[in-house]
Image 1 (spheres, helix red, strand yellow):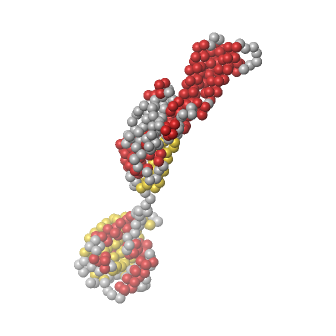
Image 2: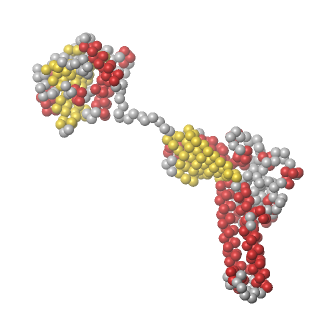
Length: 161
Length: 310
């Protein structure tokens, strides 16, 4: 686990210096300064805690060569991980397209936390070298107010090759 | 008149005293063991084949070798050798059957004789003069098997033992007990061992020859005594005497039945070996169930708990 965290930190720090995506925060959100050790390369929030975030994972060379590490593979891995092990219910699944044309998948989950329903979206884009993960979530009533803006932000997501 | 009253003080007739003396002698004889009746020449010579002793001879090849030869005492080769046995009239090392008719009808146990105990095959000389107490072996085996699927393996074990003419006398979730003809004990055990990984294998050959012979001699003595008592009963002139004899007859009859039961049990265990198999699931490392984790750290850092932690 420690090695994994270290690897993630190294990956994050390595990616900090190079641009792999372009994301514009909705007007209702402010962009946070993510520390170097953060799991996210970019994150923004509304005043009431609805979050939009991006993490870009560099696939190792072997993973990149592995034909099974496709968008479908990562989509299925996330679906199983969240549904079977984290208590999320998959409410919707959709194909999405980045502004730069990359085809992606969007998984929309719901989860009750202490009686409060929450919404959690995971949107995936994959390039040869990177997996782009765009996450959005928050309390359902608050999230629904931001849903249009979040959908627009994701539609404007740019993958920088 | 009760038997005790014979010993009570008072006037007695000569006939009653004679009856009492006879009963005492017979009682002593019935309690005796083979040591008192077995002639010096050995049991076989003393056993009259004409009055109910069914003697069988077995021809055993000592070249059976194989399975038992490396790790078992020589006597333990008997099961393999028994397969080659053929009934024949009285011979050294054979097993006399009990006198009772029920035993005469049974297929009695056989024992090792011939070359195994008399390598030279001599019919005379010193070897034939000595009494030979050849072993009568009861075979039992215990196997602990590690198997993949206990129920399916138990079914296969049952089919295996049935293919050898045996049967299962007990079955539960962990254990089965099989009975198989003694001459097929080795084959059956070998076949059953192949059903899994043998974690433990124990077998034993218990020699019950002396016990068997003792029982037979006690049976013969009791039958003889019963015959004499019957004669006395026929000659009894007074009711009291007849009742006393009948009491003894009842006791002797019960004793004969008890010995017959013991002999039947021995014969069954001699004819059919017992193999107990304990089935144990093969120990494996736990297979990860739903809590598996792919070796991609970022996958395990998805979720609202990470996203909303500012």
